[in-house]
Image (cartoon, rainbow, N blue to C red; front, side, top):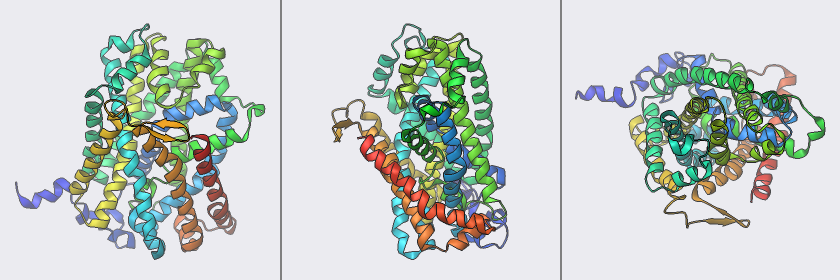
Length: 485
């Protein structure tokens, strides 16, 4: 092979094309990685990161448990205030500094170089176990597509099927490996030829699939009761738990404090409007979550007829909802096997776009800090995925005797990774980001990067970043410690 062609395989001539891609001689064009070729490419990639498993299995469960319509109202109000502010902040930090998460905080204030290393721990922990769950999704997609009798029969025990699968010695590892390989193959092709190109394909497909499934669900007999539950707010159902649940879901759903938006922000063109892009990302993420709830909640009402049985089904969350309750629900519907296959195809696409963004955040950090080629960084990330992913997967099988005791609860290896990242590290990272940006960085310069010119907006931004957002994040941290344990 011609040696001069090797960089085109690993880096795809990214370094050579940086100046043109980033807008000529602007400061941001000097960084060692390429950027998105278009504004829509950035929005679709960032929206793909935000649209993930949390929208599909966490949002519907929380909406049903915390009052339906009133939860949705709280979520939307928080999305246009708290969520939007944190999203534009992270994007602005990335674009202003032109660096990934390891260098961004050092550029804001040299005293906080160490904070970037704390930030990068989050995707390092999340990506492997997220890919394990992505493998489970692939297994269910394949099973429904081919009509596996153990899963698609109306009389089958979905819980026993799921437990048998995840405790198997090799099957989960095989599907995990396929999902992890698909993720890293996209990332190794780079920002434009990999992430942006795949996002432009998968995001429209996601939109088509989620709308199709939502229309199918609400057309089922009895589904309108579930639709009413979701969209008609009952203010008598409001409580501080409703607000806290909506706040937590928004935080996890928008890929905040995962090093992703800072990394993607560093790839963003200087002539792109950060606020406009953030609004588009927020709208995509919120609509996807709503449509996911429109699939699940009305379908459960249609199958059960509502009442206590529907309420009991919606008490399930996470993997139980996705891999036990929903297969039972699909098996009870007309054409359920085909609809289930389409649904798990939707889930697979959503999981893949999110895992790609997690992997890219780590790859960008390695390339920047250690001056690596993209393919070398991808190999290291792939190795991390395989090691920690295998531990997470085998934690339900041969390593199942290993249980971590916290607060009287026993956690599997995967559950422990999930708890540490989602309930401890992410809130801490978000609090630290707000404090550094609000008190120790050039706040005016960041607001200029965001495009906030009016005095009222700048005052609102300062109040949100310095006071309101850290308090909200502290509430999530405290609730995670005391309510989840």
